[in-house]
Length: 212
Image 1: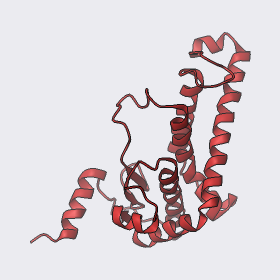
Image 2: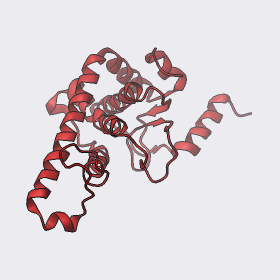
Image 3: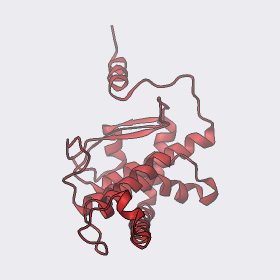
């Protein structure tokens, strides 16, 4: 008869994909991934108190060395048409928190190249906020496409400057949040490194103020 653990494993495989048994991380890489995913989870916890983190893992799957599964506040398939500026900034902060967790726990020299997807997501959100959604105070209510910016280099430079400013602000917010909760970050990363996956019950024990 199947055990409870077997049923749980089957559910996780159906929801999150098959664990790659052929890929084993070196100890240092495993610790870096644990720090990275712990950073994302902690940022989600504090930036989006209404969201529920269901699962965190550093078991490699196709296209990913680890991830944090959480319940979104919206089922908007278009990806944020109704987001507020505060929500966008929080989302970008979460995207940058994995990288910042590595910086905090591993040092500048220990940071990995594993944040590429996070950076693409953060940059895409910021570009839309600044250039398409009219949420930047300096540019105001402008919707700018590539052709428009190509014809106005000064405006293109301003857009780049404003996007960098948004990213720098969110990066600093992520850094400050993780520094303020470093003990929780360390504990989450330690447990993730040791167990490789954490379910909702285990996460709640590590984050006692976890929203239910």
